[in-house]
Amino acid sequence: MSSADKNLSVFKTEDLPDISNKRFAILVAEWNTEVTEKLFEGAYQTLVAYGAKAENIERGNVPGSFELTLGSQWFAQRDDIDAVIALGVVIQGETKHNDYINHAVSQGITNVSLKTNKPVIFGVLTPNTMEQAVDRAGGIHGNKGDEAAMTAIKMLGLYSQIAQGIAYGKYF
Ligand code: DLZ
Image: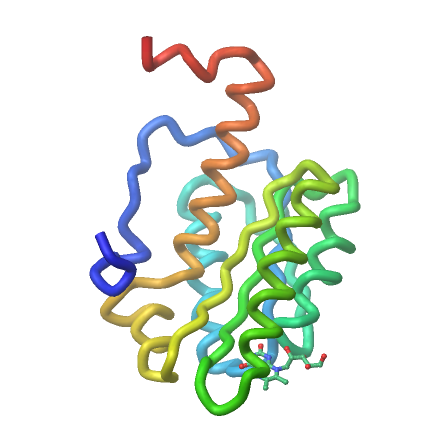
């Protein structure tokens, strides 16, 4: 399925882990804030809908998507944070700036995730137009924030299965 056809708010929800005692951090970029606030709402509501406690969800704002990497690291380094969700919108087009930002953030977040051994989720929309962004922030293509939150939940579940040695259980 191409990303244009995918609804970001539709996902498989079998075998999700208990996240009632997991702690999450959501970072929100302030560029294109009308869209990033919708991403935040989606991520927050999805975490709560699947069992996270409101008091276990923290939020941090960063000026732009470029700063998501360092903000993520500050959260992920904390022992009491289990997963970080980084949300931003970088509209492609007018300048080459977006290439630098997108590359730096995707690489940076990957590095933070590997360094801290925690899920640090790339919830950054990189559309060509603002309309495409709106379509993916609670519009006709669902909400990237929902998808980012579900990805964090699933990665915590996978980690738990692997740590317990039961990741193979249901496939063989
Ligand atoms: C500078 C910039 C530009 C041109 N575009 C975006 C954007 O579309 N989305 C976004 O989140 N941030 C943008 N920024 C700001 C950078 O991410 C960063 O905050 C500044 O370059 C300061 O380091």
